[in-house]
Image (cartoon, rainbow, N blue to C red; front, side, top):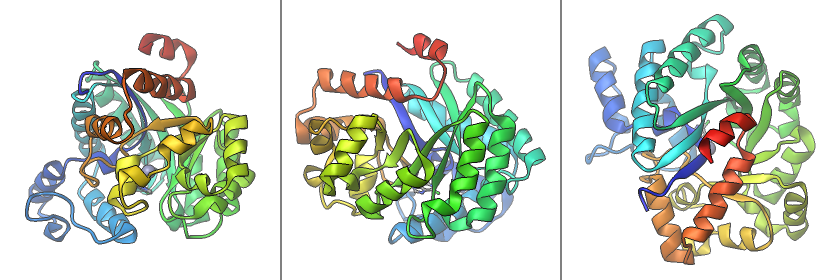
Length: 317
Ligand code: ES4
Ligand code: ZN
């Protein structure tokens, strides 16, 4: 399972930071974030909102472009070791100099150069705003995204607390990014129900949705997703770890697939959820009987929905 070539579309770069890497940087910089670690060296948090706080604390040791270059190398080497050949990572100007355009360009250059040093895997970036930082900050993030749209920065998205504000509050940012040529995804239907997916589609017109799994509760919405071929970036391990579903056998990934919804598999924030792409595949094989043919289909769906250009896709196929 580990060797099987994999395409991953939903990975938060900072959220993929190995805890030992973050702890090492904290020691180097004499920043005390010892409270965010468990005794066995993992990340410690109680629930999703606390996760977002711990996530920010971990990011506080990523103080400059060089730290992000080191992070990028560490994350890509780990992904490549699980057979991932192509990955799209959410990159956050908010954690890279506070969504200042000049700073963002420097951080981005460092990440892109670092990615080129790991040739076993192709990385593309999705600039992401953070919903609970508010619409005004999101506009600054969108400006950074629009400013750096190219062959590497291929998308724009939104993560963070799904219960803060409404998708429509972020419409200006998404339109700005789209006009710059970026493709659109947004987190929805992880916590906010099927309504959150519907509202996001109406307000932001995404071609992909991060999670989106709660759409299963609204059959007409599933039909709409299938019809429009809106691809879901499903993160089963993340959903089970955070308690969106009590166990993988209750997770709707297979029911969505049966209904004709385009689904793909990703890890979200692997060390936070104690997962890897290998573990995701093993768990899906065990629980739903997924075999090589199903994994080939999931990877083809992911490649079809990837935001990179056609020539890049050819090098992955
Ligand atoms: C997230 Cl803002 C952010 N970062 C990492 N993982 C996330 N999941 C949802 N929002
Ligand atoms: Zn996510």
